Image (cartoon, rainbow over all chains, first blue to last red; front, side):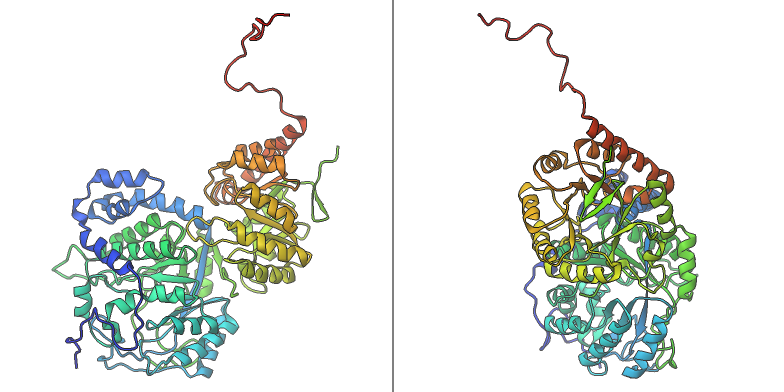
Length: 384
Length: 255
């Protein structure tokens, strides 16, 4: 049953309300953002500045900036070198479970989809963690589908405690939590939280999130703030590029991160850039389709607007793209990725969320990084 | 003439300290050798002891490790990291960094002073990274620092000695080695810092991102040495604006 009658902008019971004006600020910027108004001069001016303003960022995300990708890439390369040197961090995701209570029309894990579901037991989770640690990795991202009932807070907490035995840095990509729940998971050993808003267009958001707690836009929006208030050290931002107007969404994600950084100057900020791929040979190509060129534009714009932020490049992209984007703009790359539930050292218990395009092992990614004159970094965090 | 840098009971011939954070590890050894560095910093959070690409495996044994507390946001966190660093590096040297701003990576002098006080009492040789403020520098002296490391300009910016006048005040007033850290982008800037009387210069990004790392490390070595020699020689008279008037300004005085 759809819950379309539920107002996606109203909190549900049990959802903590955040006293923050960031949502209004981001929505207001997004509504005002008209990318068709920028001229080549605006783009050129942005490219010679040492500090990119929000208005410059808006110009760099406009269609007018597309012919300037090479210039953007050169500037991005120098910024990435300045802030990160040769370092490229490695990590892998581990799917603990794929149960989900949401109905997101674009996602294979959605509650209405009849796929094989499962969750790792704690002993299975530990087997998986050990197998991943044996590849040399020291950073892990733990994921679940979004189901408080099937993948409860204490289950996730126990998995984090296990992960903290083998990994220096533990991140989570799970359903949004209240502040004190983030504190609990931080105490279990997690330091980084990834939450993606998917789209900042509130109308579109309501149309594609038909059911489940994810339907509530502001609760998800304020998750980064609650995570930081709960003691987490870093938060990640992202939209599902192509779900709505990717230029507006990328602009909003950048502004969201900007306002969070202003409010929490100590927070480590990062971006992820997943995209919905355009259909191949689709006769009706939309100008808003996100091809590699457009994806690169977004990644470069993030880098230029926030030169100090981490950028992760997804395994959804082909190896040729990933290999070139590290060092230039991206600072973190996944390796040895499996997107089913388990599968590293235990039998896969659930279907995969999406198909990956880069199945290379940690060793292969390691060699690739070195071959590009960059430095593979396995550990860049101390759990204090 | 012996001119050694003395810190925490150790003496160093070289006044060039190499940072390690932005390098390809295979180049570190070459940079140390051609730069003649005897001290190299190391972010403890990057030390992958027993694991892949462990930076410690690339640093020659005769070079003094200067672990830093990068990642610490408070005095308390820095103290914890310093204690871990002592176990791993087997050394009391610690480059203290407390940073609460992910955008500019500016050091928090106040928290760093608090951590210095605790660590100095525990026997650490504390070398705090700081913003060049005279009051803070005096507080570092009081807290037991072995040297102070003011920034020349924002870290990684390669902009040189933006804080030149303030670093000069520290050199003139503070009776500890003043080591210029962060922002040095060219050998000429390192030379200037040494000429001003800095005890040493630390550099990372400028070398790590040079086209030829080995050659740039060598250039820094030479610049630091030249600057030091000039300081010891005592700079000659340098006129400020224009040539002086040859007729005396006070010739009108009677008697």
